[in-house]
Image 1 (cartoon, helix red, strand yellow):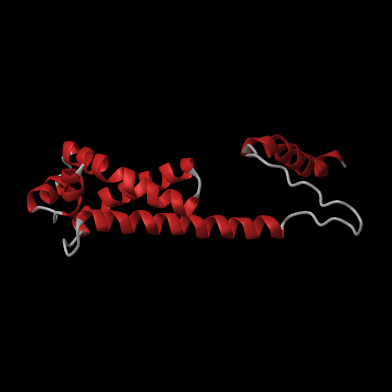
Image 2 (tube, rainbow, N blue to C red):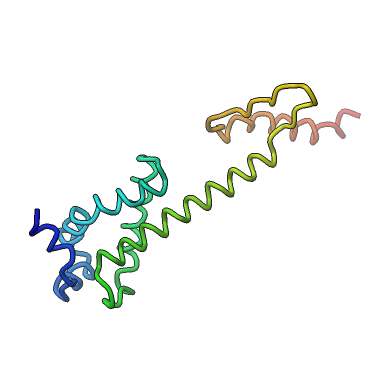
Length: 147
């Protein structure tokens, strides 16, 4: 355990950085295995949603993989990954708040004395209204020909 903790705080070696930059899968697997638990734990504390935390940490590793050439080495690799993951989590929180504001803006307003109407939950399939749109379009197009 102590060796594992010590390993986290050792500076990133140029060899490991070169392997990561060259796309070495085993280097990325080791990096993921080493840092995933700490990143997930930190992101989970921000989001309080295990599934969303998994997604955010995965996005952080994808971003790190895409931007590894921009890592200057002025900090430890784990610190860089941590900042990416935390920023991804904070972006997710901001996006969720923005979405919540828009949903509350479009929520139906109950008349005085009535209970607040329930907002339907769940995902609406985009194809669900496609038939209606096509029917309306057909009606609009065929109307001039009927007269």
